[in-house]
Image (cartoon, one colour):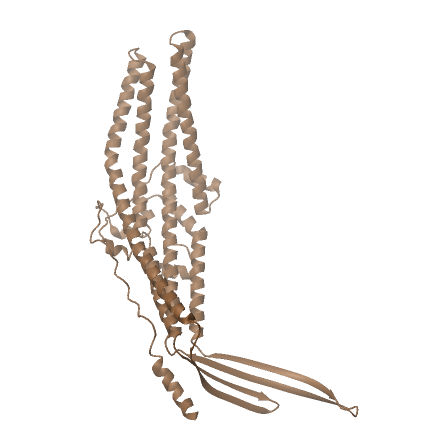
Amino acid sequence: MDRLLAVAPVFALLVSACAAGPNYNRPPPAVAAAWQAPVPHGGDSGKLLAWWSGFDDPILTSLQASAEKTSPSLDQAIANIDKARATLTTQRAAALPNLTGSTSRTKSRQESAAGGATISKVSQAALDASWEIDLFGKARRNVEAARARIEARTDDWHEARISLAAEVADDYVQLRGCEQLAEVLRQATESQETSARLIRLNADAGFSPASDAALADASAASTRSSFTDQRGQCDLLVKSLASLTGLEEPALRTLMQPSAGVLPAPRKLDVTSVPADLVRQRPDVASSERELAATSAEIGAAVADLYPSLTLSGSISTSAGLQQWSFGPSLSLPIFDGGQRLASVRSARASYAYQLAAYRQAVRDAVLDVEQALVQLNVARQQQGDAETAARGYQASFKATDQLYRAGASDLLDRESARRNALDAEQSLINVRLTEIRQWIALYKALGGGWDASNTALAATGDHQP
């Protein structure tokens, strides 16, 4: 027995150099060597960080700052980081010796047959220690998994920041576009209402048919209805921005007022990276890869459970002036458990296979997001020239038709048709411009805009500010 006590620590040190299970290697992303979509040039790919500042719009910058300060989604992400750190502390503690102390004091009274009584007092104190030697690396694999999950949760925090910034910017530019559309419809409504009143007066005086008055009233009512609907859409976007930024709606409307109806111009971006580089730019992909590393480590922890475990334990106690101590190893051998441990290994390996598939899907989704944004951005940029030409042409057509109508050479139906075409073309031009800006935002987000590994410390402090 004494010999066993002597060699146990040496044996533990030798075996603890081993760790059961596979050693993790990051899988290479299976992506194409080049983008399969038109790539914009002429900008700076280094401007992804705080990309919204490239809009040169102080209101948008202010909204982004407000959103980061008060975002519940970022608070949730930080709480998940704290939870992951607590798990790491728990796993580290499992590999350390455990020491507990206890003390007690009892007082007893015993009566004798002769009628006397004996009072005794007993004090006891004890220290118990135990240490499960990490023979096959179970504790180390659990610590490895916990560390990987801290990194994954930190990546999730970065992803939450990116999504929040993109959502704020998208709602903001939609609101500015909505304000432009509402202003166009307001002006059209006023113009048509004025025309309708004049035509109604002429019809009442018998200078024009009643059908012209009815048509003019109907056209004005239709445009007025569109204007009312457009204002409602703008109000919905204001409420969405208020929810994202945590600002009171009256304060938000006051903040937005100075630049009402002005679409911000995004900074151009030169997409020079290849799809494989995207893996290093997307925090959601990085998070999925860290989860993969964690599940790999958990395979090792499950495999280690198949092997014996060695525990060193000892105790020191004193009672009634007597001291006792004990020390010795104990070896636990898993002989029969109905297949529970083997099932745990299979489950861990299945979790790894699942997460590997999830990681590969995340890489594919990331590439798809970028290529879709590139295609839609290219389409919007090509459409803009045609939309501008159409808007100018329909406006010129309306002016000419209006002059003919006033000269009596054209009827009201032709005039209202030309007016409607001009209005539709102007709205289409605004929508094309809006779509281009929104696709720039989608591209910034798809490329992992705003993610910088050096900002990880912000998650540690809970500071939402970029």
